[in-house]
Image 1 (cartoon, rainbow, N blue to C red):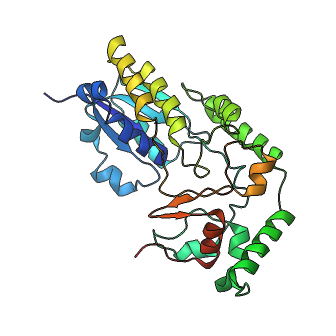
Image 2 (image 1 turned 135 degrees about the horizontal axis):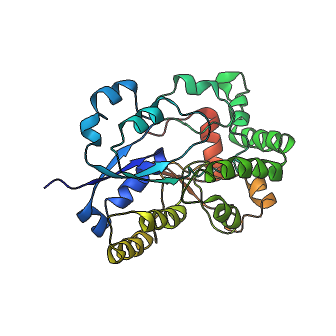
Length: 288
């Protein structure tokens, strides 16, 4: 007998939530878990993959909401949802203020998947490939620290902008996250990058989605919530690429969890903050 499905519609955070949901015993026994990642979907996918047949067994949708006019993918999603399915909205979690130099980098236009997808405009300006001086490591890192000190923005203002954006999206969601993020991001590491999360936010979000999910008995829902919280203990979340926080930003924002001597995962590597910046400036390959 075909099981009903939970469909998770969301970006890379939704993809990680799919991994979590598929490991929850009561959820796995009751539902199939499907995912549509709109950041990867194409129009052809809607013709060949996300067809009416794909949606036929969808009973529940965990829907990552967004403000503004619906784009093509969301219009297609809404047009194909079966009548009567339950939709539970959750927000994308974004914190830009800890990485304020994430502007453009011309090298991304021709980069492959194994380079640096989290741009740093100050670091890019120092790249020898883009007209910067070919300096020794110590001088290059010192130049980066000097330039970032000169161009450091008003971080509290950046946080207020994050708050305005996040509250606008939270208003559309059934599960709200921003107040909790704003209350906790200084004392607990919640983000590996501006949009990739540690396990802690997932440990808060997923149980709240489960509590609202129909077709689970109170006993099943309670067990699944506890199991999700347990799975996130000792888990590192979306840590395949960790962009370390600038030490001056950590100090000014009062990040009590920040360790200036920590090493940060970048695929198979563990880099210090200095190593990450130098490798980024030089666009050093890190995959064989």
